[in-house]
Length: 334
Ligand SMILES: O=C(O)CCC(=O)C(=O)O
Ligand SMILES: [Fe+2]
Image (tube, rainbow, N blue to C red):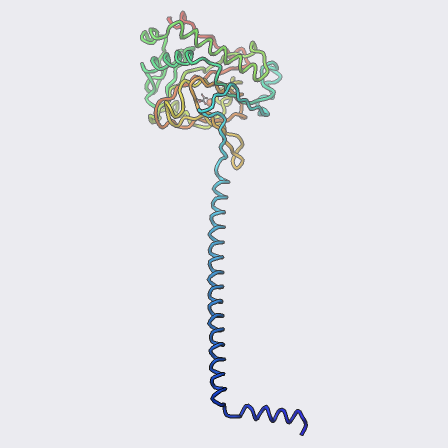
């Protein structure tokens, strides 16, 4: 018998050999060990699968939140603040390219049409006592009449004063004529003059080529529901589209956002659709905001939710044929 065959025989003999008590105990121990390993293995497998489950659940939740935030922020207009109430700005100016609608007029009014457009805010141009004088006059006169909706105007050039859903002629109201004093008009003309000079300086044009134009008016805005289209001041618009004679628009604020009224901020809208961004001016007593009137300065006013907002819109044209005269007490007392 070869060695190999002999070993096979011996091996076979071993397997058929009856187990002794000692080897039985050893087997039990071995089985226990195997069972323990299997239990640890099971535990490990369970832990791994619950870790994997948690990992994927969290990943899905995080990704969903990120997707929602991404699309939400993508659809939200980016909002910047051009002038806050808490700021006192001697001058904040932003210049940019003009829109195309000026091109024809460039030839017609070369000394006045802007070649660089923009917007600025100036908080120190008008004196507080000048603001108080104009506010006092506007409040008292508009109180005599006023729109039945939320927006009333007083134009002391044409005489138009909102009344219900129509307009009255302020020149024919003796009570209004008693309110307007020479110093009101002196202040009004002085204020307009300062604003005109600031516009001329900032846009690099000679002031004598700039003409006050229609409509130039006081406005009073409250949260009363609009009754006619004249009360709907909040629509996004381009001043030059509403009034083609406009080249420069300015606003003098007579009351302060969050102090005298809530809502009512002025909002420039830059870019369209997904590129839309906004730049907000918070009205503040004595603050002048001025800008070129084309589509480079599309804007709207937020709806006033509380209180009363007073402002003066002062408009300028490069075209002399659209100029209006300063109001004079003599003409008012017709
Ligand atoms: O009152 C304002 O702030 C702006 C009003 C306006 O957009 C306008 O008169 O064209
Ligand atoms: Fe406007």
